[in-house]
Length: 109
Image 1 (cartoon, one colour):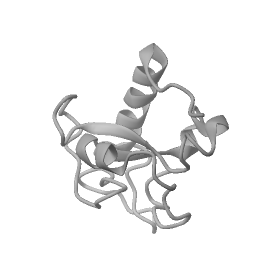
Image 2 (tube, helix red, strand yellow):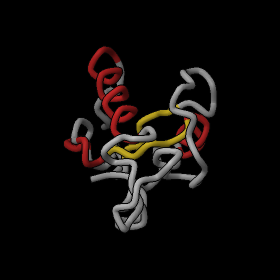
Image 3 (tube, helix red, strand yellow):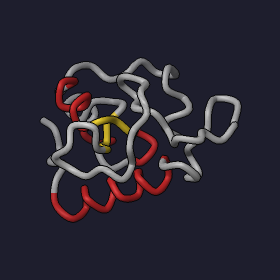
């Protein structure tokens, strides 16, 4: 059973992800370590994210759990399990299998 992802703690983690992956953020780099001018892309569709948009805009940033919360509830609050995703992409992904390991190395640390 998945751990709940809501409340002040989830909001704090979203803001941390925003600060790290937005243009100029420490994790906004490609696989070679080169800075990404537009920040980290969506880990699901690969398109740029507008880090200034807010929920409920479908293009706003959400936390995508690389390893699913259903199968790995112990990783719910582990930052290395977070990837930036559009709200719309994340919602359509649902609780399916986790993302392929290594495919999004530039997105999470």
